[in-house]
Image (tube, rainbow, N blue to C red; front, side, top):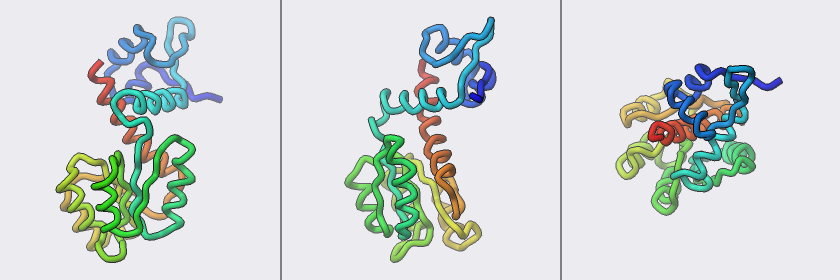
Length: 189
């Protein structure tokens, strides 16, 4: 059965004011069903709507996600999880290659392992923040209490995903960044 939300719930879900939702409803700009005198929103339809908005208004047609990890299995999990959702996946197996890709391609989101051959993830994050301070980064680690993690924490805000993780964790992380981008665009309505 579909999970239906009220105006208040969808406003909280999108992290906007209820007035923004009513404004979108008046314009017919948000998918909803009117049941009696109440508006209801299907969660999956709202997620699809957000994804469509993010790809058609200011963000790239396909968000490009960079995965920097030395494990082929991790990179393949990202490819299998996100390719069919319309994302372009780039990958690097070490920090230097990852930084080079960041300079060559228009990257929208980075998933970065902390333990990499050569240059560790904390150093990659430090260099990345110098050239692209607003680029969202999700740190992936199986060692959240490590010294490398402590060094990464000094580089500023980022999201954290503990290993092992699943395809659902990947989708949740990606969707949260897409939702944040769509929310910023909605606030301008």
